[in-house]
Length: 161
Length: 292
Image 1 (cartoon, each protein chain N blue to C red):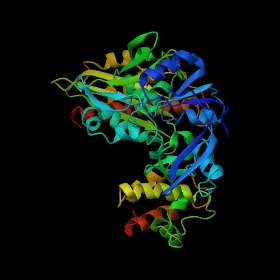
Image 2: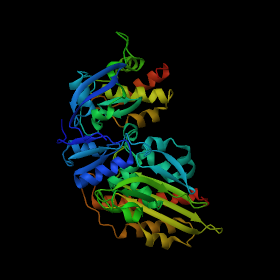
Image 3: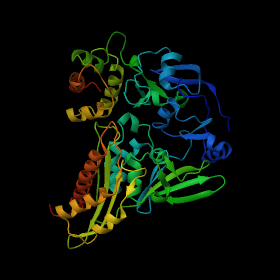
Image 4: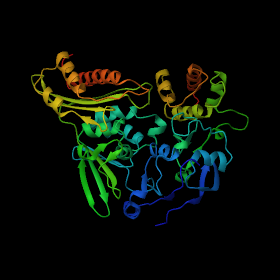
């Protein structure tokens, strides 16, 4: 058995690319993505699992990257908001959010977008009630949420999953 | 980095976990889903020297049939249980409680064993374990295996019978008694928040439509998931009626000592508890086949 580590090399796939960096084992995945790999699209609000801003996909499932240690994601496939667009072409969920004005300041948006991508991958045609339930783990202080629900519904209507 | 420094171990077998726990005792802390522990580490409310990650341990996750009930490996994700046909078929009260835990992103990581070992008295799974008379399997290098009832396991706020060198390896939930109706009802200020109060209930009716057996467990009102054996016993033999249910709900909250905080006053919580007991019992009785 390997002895306990305090710092280690962390290799994982991020947005389809093999990435690797050395980090202290107490580094959260969110801090590793932002500071270790320079992917600052994942935002940090509360840093204790309440606001949802740091939501990323871990092997396809939405998770809070502030509630996961980077060392726990070794070997995993992580998708962040940077991995959605293809060049200048927005991901259909991003485009639908844009078209619906589903954000104001935009700070919480990466988390909402990733939550929506995970939802539509599993349930391509969620009801409005189901959309609201699914978004309930993400906090926005600007929009009042209606336009975000509209954005998800628009993405679903365009078969954006 | 918000957590205080710790060393990290990623064992791959249960034996290795037990060795690490034996070696590090109360300086070691196991992490499963981490959805409660990571915030505690980040706020430095927990400062273990060694974090023992269970996520790579083979055979510790899984949902299997067990003696008419269902056994959950400790690191079974809540989301996996939520999607399990076996859970939907055998454990309706668990199936009803699971979607109320946090949010999907939380349940994608959070585990059945983790929530029960964390023993937050406002959490759903400890209440489910208590109302179903679940059996908790604990193992250690020194003590081997012991199996405790939920009543023996939960001892106080975040406090269980788990010794420092012990690992919760399995949660066994017995099958439902024939004809039982179950309900899990809670009141939270927002979907996914910790509930102010929650109630798990079971009702079995006899041939005449009276209560043959009942179970009641309140969460968020005491330092453990609170079974109410006296109220359960008093329901036996009673006809199912609004009066019976209302009397049981009044009895259920009579002895509660509820503190006030920013989320609600003690009186408000008592009111919520009484209403929630009434709703849970009514729903459970309906599902057991009581005439509307």
